[in-house]
Length: 309
Image (cartoon, rainbow, N blue to C red; front, side):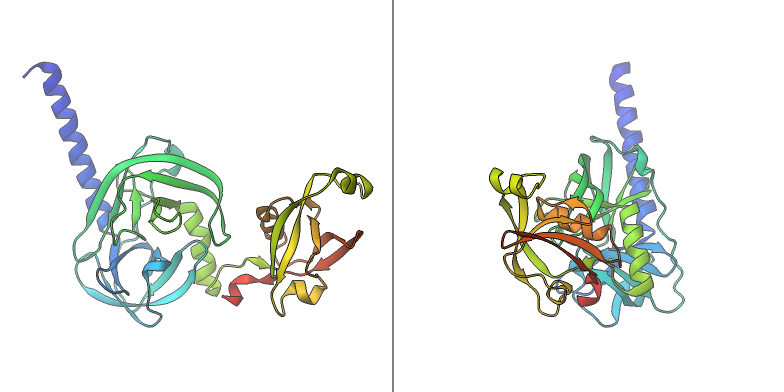
């Protein structure tokens, strides 16, 4: 064997050993959650006595059986779940001592970074290997939660892996894997985003999200209409439905109203309204609308969407 071939084989062997060690290290903080039919799902010991997993994999609402990394069984109860980010937090009952997952260096992640998806869809740990294929910013889930950054993965998130960790070559947790948020595309929610959801779920059992109770449809504004009312931009959001007893109904919003601004922010897409509401957590927000050719301003105090779920 040539020196170059020998060096390549040695490097490959070293990488292989490092990845196997990373899986072993991560596995010390991964549990199997028995809360659905067929195979269990995976969860991560996020802090002492607290497990994080993917909400869609936990179908039970009562006491849940989990298998700890050492093979012992334990019981857990749900502290809270957030369907918008598909995260759930469980509290382990009793005095089971399990090491919290070590964190990786998220700041070093780039497209092409080698990563591992690790899960425990049963007694033993399983893993898949691949790369980060894209790092998206300002992403919104299909249920309306905004996430500052999301990782798109080029690896297999096998059945039972959702809720398990994405780890670096040292076994540090970078994110939580999910196969359901983007409907068939493996994604991972960064640990920082998970931390924010975990804090709220532990504190109040749900995540606060401002809610006024309307469905909207973007519509184009004619140049003549924009000029007549001195409206900046060429589109607005038409109210197409209003929830019963919602802040919008109580505040006097009507079907057919055209939303132009919320909290001083121009509205042209439904996401614009969600972003404007998020900036006014628990505070009244001023809505500028066009109704029957007349500009009006209405003040509405959003409700906490999490309490309605």
